Amino acid sequence: MNFNEAFINGKLINIHTAFIGKVIAVNENIARVQPLTYSKNVSGELREQTPVAVYIPRNIKVKQETITYMTGLNSSHTKTIIVPDIVAAGDVVYCGVSERDITTENLNGKIAKPTRHHDINDSVILAVI
Image 1 (cartoon, rainbow, N blue to C red):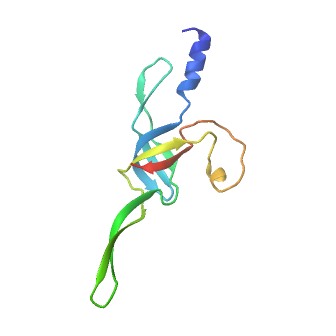
Image 2 (image 1 turned 135 degrees about the horizontal axis):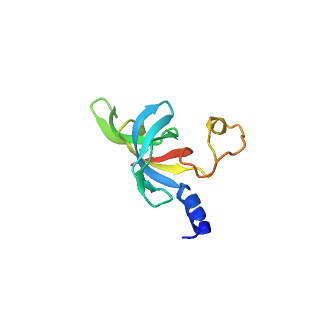
Image 3 (image 1 turned 90 degrees about the horizontal axis):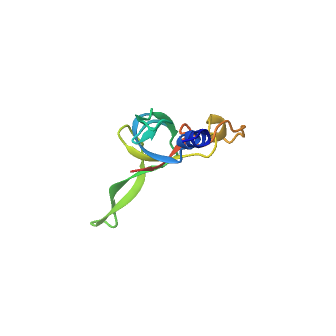
């Protein structure tokens, strides 16, 4: 591999798009997630990825609950409904990586100059698997 190919390959290796991970801790709306995939370094060696802080959107996890309600004096009806649940340690999640920096300033609606692109530290939980 020549210099140009190695340079381009090195850049491509560090572009992240999405990954599956396991939640190891939760602090309010940020989860510490261990990616369950390996990455390759420039020389092609596999390595375990380090845990990353991932943003948790509201109501990303749901659960089913059964409720019973009265429909008359001597009758009731039971129904299964879907309600919000809390992301917890041990959950397996699918995370998307933002194209740009999503630091706290950006998440709060303020505009900040982008400092990085496709960085795994700019991840958001898209689904709980």
